[in-house]
Image (tube, rainbow, N blue to C red; front, side):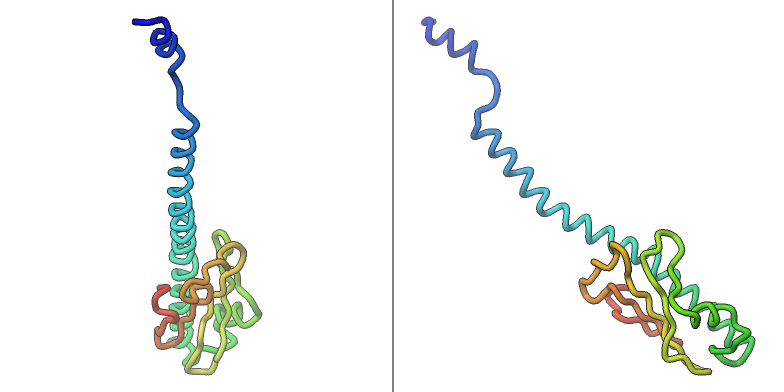
Length: 143
């Protein structure tokens, strides 16, 4: 073995600049795919854990009022009075404000509007969920 070969073997450890750049590029590509997917998953999870159960629960409570008083908009109905006073923010992280509209003795529409960081959930219009007295849900892809 010559002196040059011996010198190169001793000092040829570590990574070259090209190898480091390739690794950084691969990490960048993976991150550009993974981060948006993760954000979509978080938004969907928040929607399914906060807005959907709260709309369903309020709808059931309104149905009980209809059974007890013969109408959805009776002043004796606590849930109607609570919703009729204005925005009702969901318990938990407070990502949705729920309101009631189109109220009559025999009909209503509940709307959960995304607030805070959840307002970014605009794909398919999922930042505003609706549920009416017939159990019809809009937009359906968000449920």
